[in-house]
Length: 274
Ligand code: PAF
Image 1 (cartoon, helix red, strand yellow):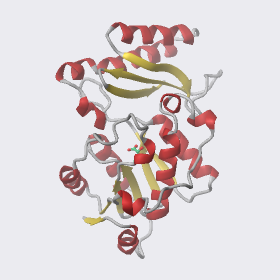
Image 2 (cartoon, protein in one colour):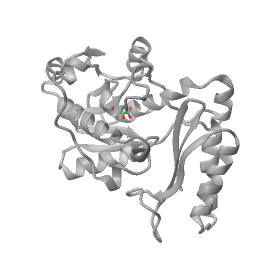
Image 3 (cartoon, helix red, strand yellow):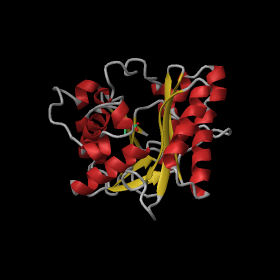
Image 4 (cartoon, protein in one colour):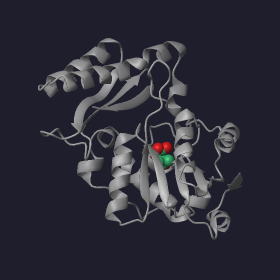
């Protein structure tokens, strides 16, 4: 496995290669990331993973400085998973001057749900993903469904900019108790880790109710918020949306339930397709 830190080194490593599959990450890798690498591997071309904690997608009060950086174990995991090239630029490499050109996703996709609670988050994500795409020039890029809104927005960005990149979605990996794997799970205390599964439980209950024909979605959402609040969580949202654009459900549309809630100081997100 080759490790490159600059765009020039990356271009040299990829010269003459076709069919590159790309997995962008912020490191602190877990089984969820490795399942993305596996999907990338299955495409047959070289697999590039990036590790870059992207300051642009963190608000000043968020965890950019404390975001776990686990370089050695990340590299060992990527190598074992069959990654060919790790692209790990420094901030100076990727943003040698302030990144004043940005990708601004439309408000109706990016200012709802995560974007409502994390203003500017998807500008940061789209800008770095666009820049990483320009560096790697992949044929395929793999994203996890755990970040459902991110996946939806990246798909639409690729479509609207006519980028010749196929976006592949990977199912969420879960711990034995059902908790969605996330780099931020490492922030949870032992007691919080036991409680954390309640977010996916609340989403499961909502999904079951929708499948069973529940029509009062406002009541369903309010009840789920209340259940988590009563257990000491601070929920941002638990909601039923259309899969395609995360707008309010319409008859016949495929649906997804999504949730975000804080447990102690850790904010967790999860979702389930109905
Ligand atoms: O999902 C992530 O880890 C990040 O948002 C991404 C796509 C690597 C962009 O920084």
